[in-house]
Length: 560
Image (cartoon, rainbow, N blue to C red; front, side, top):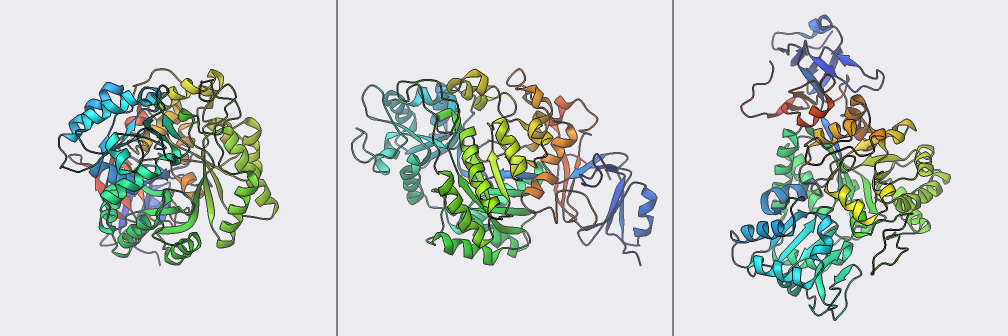
């Protein structure tokens, strides 16, 4: 006997993202118990599911798509950023940044820290001096200030923050690699690359410690925001114990309205394991994983980022007095060392995502993956970001079955892409994100926002930019390597089913198929029928997670 549906959607243009029918569109579907029980190409196929309590929604041809999947996100930090931190426009010049800081400082209580992010990495030369630190001191009005750049790998701090962290201004004492000195005086400039910022972060955490309840608030706020953008699943790319505990608490209370694949921060310097060893935290997470909080991934970093010349690049960076003429950045592991870490993860049944922004970093990762595959490993391995991948290594990714996780949206002109031009030869800087080639080689390509590194996790901008290789918001003119553009359908898959597959969540989400959770979106435009330059402006009218409406656009009546 056919099960009566709770809801039937008909007379719609439904993009299913189902693998067995590329380009497939359905006219409607039936939902019962939070699950798709039928997907129809002819609405009459749904008649048998109509019962006395069934709600039938005729959408009059309106578009419906699967819930979006963000394959690289730091959602708790995004929630904290929204609620408590200063957000700086990455396009602002130094004067603009300082004006923003001063306005924020005026509203703070005595003793509070100024914590913010987003200043453009193109400003690194401008802030790398004692004079710039003095200007930051002046607008901070006594508050310690720690400001992260738009890559979230580097920090600019004022004198009060340095004092709180025990960093001597004159440059004496033990300074971590990555501490920038004033070129003229040798004093600490206030800029810290990569892990050199750890003392500052610890000092802030000690002064303004977040509680477990705070983490729940941050996660909840993030999810509400993500739902408004149509995001219903994610791979969080750096889950420490407080973040995991918050997700588990929400899930236990029935308040987690989405799915998360957690990349455990086992070896990341900035991850808080709550006093547990690497092995203890891995066991803690694996024992507590649920259907909606998956705990079988880890996260590593092989290099830094190009704007600060810390990404591992095969081609030398442009010469500077500090780095000379043959600087290739940093790679934190040899292939042998990385393989050993991956073996320890494999023994625990853990898959791995590795941050690799430079082509040298990618090469080392692939050398390690090749060793593991040769030993019979069937674990999922993801190259995260992959802004620069040599052609030969693109084929190696295909041969070794490696996921290309592309994030953030650096496939069209923007501030970070401009910063590439400042540090790399033009022929390298203008050829990031070879997404077309990756797809053509049969590689699984999954997309992510990298929020809170990026200011907003609007995946529609990423989708539109993938298709046009142009800035969907129009702030930056021109195209970026347009030969690497993808189709609308490919872009939609990159941010739906491909992300779910890469995170091993495609058993429940990522596409509109019978047996999967009824997770879908009503949107204001048919992205398959409009000018691709308009895709980035897509508005979500309604977000449904497992049959539950979790978001309705304010002031907008979704099609009924």
